[in-house]
Length: 194
Image: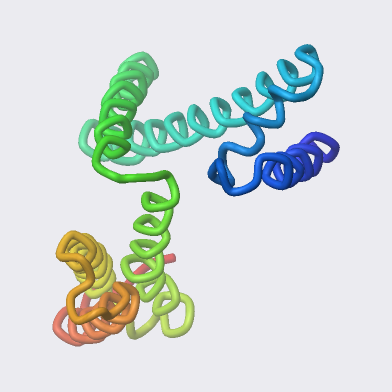
């Protein structure tokens, strides 16, 4: 990877220079693979596809394992290893189908990344920082309210097309912080345990 990733970046840049603005930046590597000898281009494409597939299946396995071991085991405490494995396998299929549906909804991978990072910034970060900075003041339900509220507001704000021209993070983050404070005050008897 230390050799291949910089090589891919350089070849993508060269492809962009060679083909000019006739192609998008993301297509420059594919185009470059067509102007170099086929065996080198084939190896480059195989390596690029391998990187993409390993990243995708790692995300699927990570999410499915978390769901099976954390959620499924929480509700079925006496689950056998075989049942947890079966739950993991079904989670992979379900998450894969959901991922395919999400890809059909978004115009590009970058749009999905923008949404996901905004959700992390507005939905998870305030509660996480609150738990680290003042663990004795942040309550469990305040954190949950903050995460759910920040995530839902991010989704609604993006689907509405960022009303008034305000970036989603500038709206969802402060609301998430406010929900964290209000939720922690209202439910202060439920402390977060790290």
